[in-house]
View 1 (cartoon, one colour):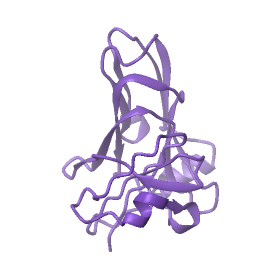
View 2 (cartoon, rainbow, N blue to C red):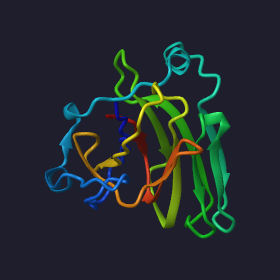
View 3 (cartoon, rainbow, N blue to C red):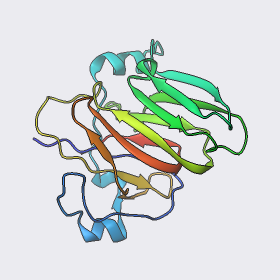
View 4 (tube, one colour):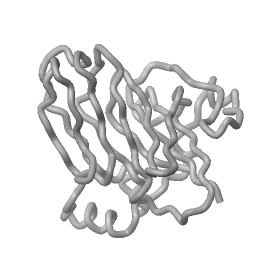
Length: 186
């Protein structure tokens, strides 16, 4: 059974790619026309995370920090289930309060694994967003990564260029010029 990673970018430019990180061809129809949200099966968080989110008792899951424009910095990590964003020096026009927030993206029983990166804004340099699959409901089988973004608040999904897969650390990273929400799906 393969596990796909769907990364949601709300408000992104249309920059689809034609190859999945595994090297398999990305279907041209998906690259050109995208997928609708009802064509994606969301991957849930592990039950311990779902219970915390739905019970309003998220022990871990949110991290916030002031990132200085001159120095850059990192937000997230262990406190956000190993999801994080790293800003190089000069990526921000001004000092900015950045938040990484673990959440359910679909709001239904399933609790699709998602992470919001805020505030939604464009950067002067690309920033590195790293997502971990350590806490998603994954059985340990073969992984097949597909990375997507949505340019219309979740209605249509397109491919993202150049994801970096780290099997040892169970992460996928992408370089982006802006962000809001990311999520996992089949």
